Image 1 (cartoon, one colour):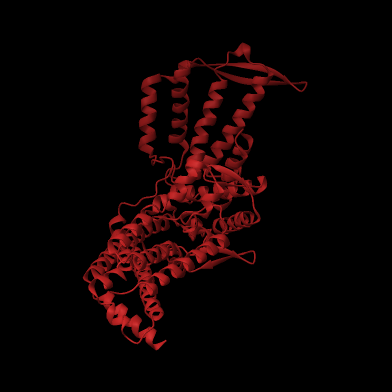
Image 2: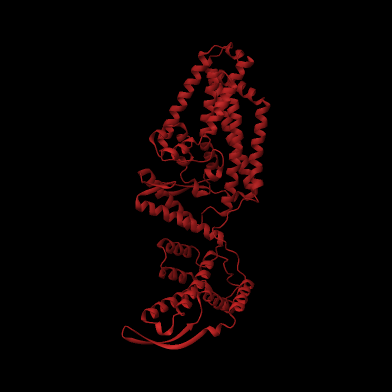
Length: 518
């Protein structure tokens, strides 16, 4: 072991003396530190709807515009008393008729709502659209009033019992919308949504959001963020009920492993929602910036390691420096082992350096509290892993393909004894890392595609199946060599990569010990 350690130390010293290595290390560190800073002001999480703030002046302006369009609104109104027989009882009803065309109806309805808001609404206590529930109540109030006005366009002589029942229903909705909007009573909003013909999922969404935010204090972005989590939780639960899971745009039957993963995802989301532990908006910003920095820095790490591994044997042969090792009293397997240990050290050191620097830079820009922990289930209960430990393990797991590419470059270097060939082929392998996804799109989910190395490289989605629930983003946003997942189980991919690594090691070792050193 002492001889191997001496050879390993000698190898590390030789690599550390290469100027190109330190240039790439400096660039890698600079990318890890600077990118979060550069993205700090540019990274944003937008809401899916434009919730522009509505001020009293805006409503006054709209009211004046509608007044100029309509003139005196009373000239469009006439009244009479109608009688209806409902369940053998006569109901006397003071009815209103609006003499408007379809184009003017919207202006009349908006004018009436604006006047009511300007007269009765407490802008100081309840700023309009300051929260998601406030916005929904505001929209429901206008919609409910318009529905009543639309019924009032019916001529008096055409109004039958059915019209009266529809009118009663519409005015009850209007009363509920007023209670929700003017007084921020979101139990009234729940009742209104329950009465209307809307999807059950939307009813559940409003019900849960109202329970979480009974006083309507959450801002628009925060409320919409919670809504997205609730919708995702409902989607997972619906998939469990149907016995399917979604992979890209395809639904597949649930396996036992996928069922357990979906059940745990539901538990985690419910825990985060109920305990206000959802990743915040700043968490998404910070995580996106950090992942982008890590991917950019890792690209430089890939270049560095491919060059080092590809030239590990061939360059020493070309310069003749390897002869000093061969003639020394050390067996070739020890030399081989020392070189692999040195290459592996650079992989780990590069990964840790990138993770540490990008985390520090992100913490400085966005605050260390914005870095979300990782949530997972253990023993049926939601468990938390600290962000720092998870980030390191996540990035190490995400670099598993890098080690395989490095080993491939080292193997090619041992066989070809040519730096250009080793580096060129290894670089080509890296650039074609997404070929399995392309083949799947071209040929469908074929079994032979599962046995390609590229289909088993990225294990992050399998080792950390709930990474998206703690603010991490997928490969489309993460950058080069991002996260990819497929239907293959983790055990299969681990066995496949173990066999592949063993084969590459045997081939590399055989090429190293059999060929003569001239």
